[in-house]
Amino acid sequence: MLLRLDDLTAGYDGVAVVHGVDLEVRAGEVVALLGANGAGKTTTLLAISGLVPRMGGSIEVLGQAVHERRRRSVADVWRLARSGVAHVPEDRGLFFDLTAAENLRLGRPKGGDAVPEAQLLEWFPALTRVMDRKAGLLSGGEQQMLALARAVVGRPTLLLVDEMSLGLAPIIVEQLLPVLRAIADETGAGILLVEQHVPLVLAIADRAALLRQGRVTFSGTADELAARPDLVEAGYLGA
Image 1 (cartoon, one colour):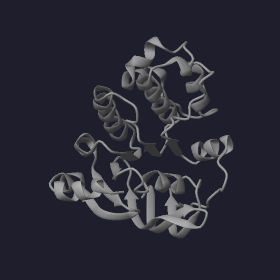
Image 2: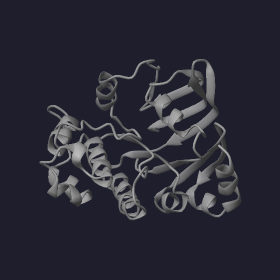
Image 3: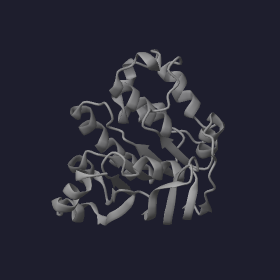
Image 4: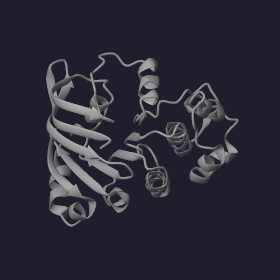
């Protein structure tokens, strides 16, 4: 088991945002974490990364308990990468004054087994023509591809992706979601994907959990949730 949440409660300034969340991610599978804005999806990812306080329950990543850090820093990003976890935040976390190639270089493990550039460009072919451009000058779709490529270049065991579709045209989302499926299949990485594009995500996910007001209202296979539009509608009518 790559990730296990057991009765997780987490939040900010002593106020719980997620309550009693149970969740698991196994090797080679894509798990979708769904819900409306404010449902607690991002808070859950930050708690997994140790970047917001855990107020109850437990978090195990790659068999190790996660202990929160109250201030997020660049050191936290490297700490996660060294532990085999890559986190793509909703703001993408790129260094906008560096080129695409330089951003990718930062993700490569020193002396480690990096994904070859040819493989990265097979997954993200649009990056081929922008490697020498500064990240801040790329389109939103190109920035998201770069953020994903930088996250996977170090062969993470667990990949956390927060709101990949944020600000992107639907056609770009339709292109990127199958890439995440391919990465899980080809590398064996487990992927926890926070998203709001429910039909597209369920088409590539193995399992899904639906959050509403910080609580899990559904947990099961993607096919099971796809067959329950009433649950999805209820989850998105209110956070």
